Image: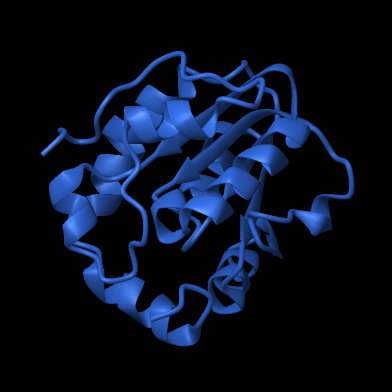
Length: 179
């Protein structure tokens, strides 16, 4: 299944567990906000259904969402968010805009290794000096549970992929745990 289809949009909607939104809004996202530069705009690379965008809006933070799935972007726009159809490996809709804060929540594991390298090159150009990128990826068990996952991303993979960039892993934590 390709992640830029209506079929994938429907698949995501069915996978979400009851209580997921509550957990994200009240536990997980507040943890992430502590990592960002205060009140600087955020780019959500792979914004999906817009949960993070909604959380930003409630906190008064400006956030722009990017997703390759037009159905998901239309849902975000209908909720009043600034969301754009674009490929996270190209980011042509941003036309040189820079951000201090970026998030990619359960996105890069859907890419192959070459696409992930392209993604990081785009992020490197997108982030202002000392910018922060938070990349959330599933642990081994979560990776195996989704048929749309292509590349298992762990610390060793990231270090190899980031070798020829200015990006570096400064902190790692597991969501919810590394199983």
